[in-house]
Length: 226
Image (tube, rainbow, N blue to C red; front, top):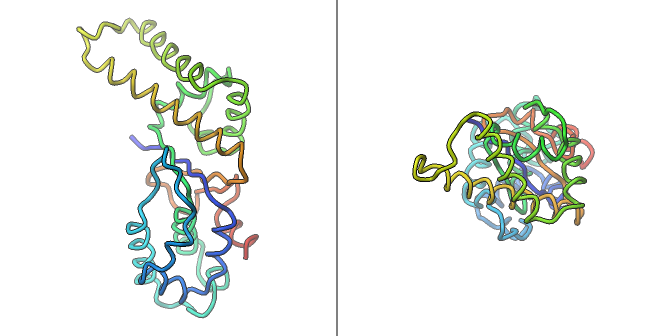
């Protein structure tokens, strides 16, 4: 089951990386000297590790040798796929924190608040996430988290499923997982609302060309920031 992935991205830091000639990126990732350009991580969230991203970026250079290393990414004669792949890794590099959730569980966190049926396609929509964020702005974190748990319990009961932990040992861990995940989503969207941060939206196994930053493809973002 694939995860929907949201990341808070420092747009200024991304702009800086996109302006660096590829030779500088290669040297900086090889020597780990670009780590000081990563935004400070929000300790409440996970984000991709420095060493993992450095490895992914170095692998990209190994796979794309026919490039002009004296020029930035936007000035390369590459097609959209490899360009988006490197741009996505640079966006990951500029993230402060990440929130992810199984796609099937997301309906519990979104539909009751928006009071309408949601399609899985909308989970990749920046408009939907801002709509949800606007609703959450009038709620407190505990109330939202508890409403998610109560809705989940109600759905189980409608299906005739037990709510007795003695009959199903997965009930309490699942309840805590919903509480924790909805709690962290509230905090994630709260920080996004309160600061000048962009939202990177994607899904596990999604092609880099399909990821978006504030509803814009990475190719278009790169052209704007170049």
